Length: 155
Image 1 (cartoon, rainbow, N blue to C red):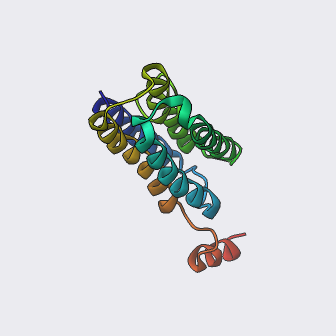
Image 2 (image 1 turned 90 degrees about the vertical axis):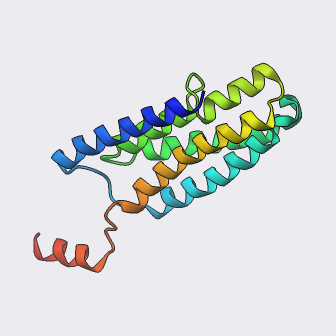
C-alpha cells in the first residue's frame, strides 16, 4: 500500500527538479527549514510507533506532530521560489494520500494498527521526509563564501 506513493513522490520530485533546473529558480538553503524537516521526521516516526495503541490514547501527541508539520508547511509556503518543497509537504501531510497524513487518518479509522503495517509505513514516510530534507540540504547556501563572492562582484 505504501510503495506506490513514494514512487509517485519521486516522480513529482524528478519532474519538478527538471522544471526548476530549466528555470534556475529555487529558493536558497534555509537552516531553519532543514532543522524542522529533520526534527519532524524523528517526531513523526516516534508517533507512528505508538499506533499499536488506541488512537484516542495518543491524540495529544498526534495533534502536536500534525500541527508542527502544518507549521513547517506554512513556513515553506511563504518562502520565495519554493514551490517544489511546498508540493512535497502537501503530499506528506495529505490525509487522502498514503504518507503521514494518510497514516494518521487510517489510525484514527482503525483505532490501532499492526506492527507490520506500521513498520512498512514508516519506511515510506521516512523516505518522504528524507527527500524534503535532502532537497533543502542541496540548495545553494547564500552565506557560502563562493556565493557571497559571486554576488558581491556581480551586482
